[in-house]
Length: 84
Image 1: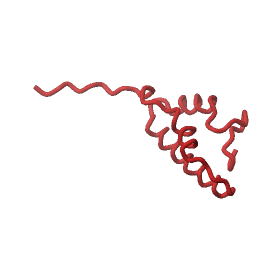
Image 2 (image 1 turned 60 degrees about the vertical axis):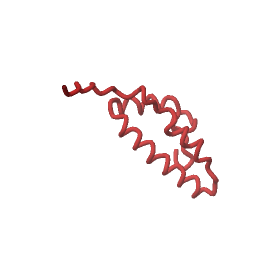
Image 3 (image 1 turned 90 degrees about the vertical axis):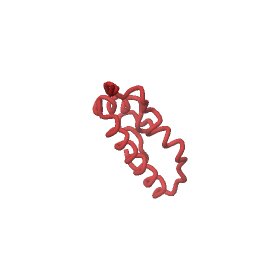
Image 4 (image 1 turned 135 degrees about the horizontal axis):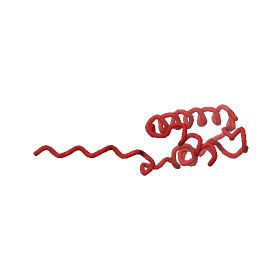
């Protein structure tokens, strides 16, 4: 729910755990696209909160929107054979 950035289903700060699971499933195999999507939403959240007159904690928002992503969740690329 914008501009407060709360989940429509559970009213927790978005992306809540169920939203994270949904996003991870929806963007499976496309971790870079997921990162860009969340970064764009992070910027929108910052803009919305400033427009409401709030002084958002940008570090906390960064952890909330992007901190749950993990490099270990990305599919690994096959290694190239080294040239002789």
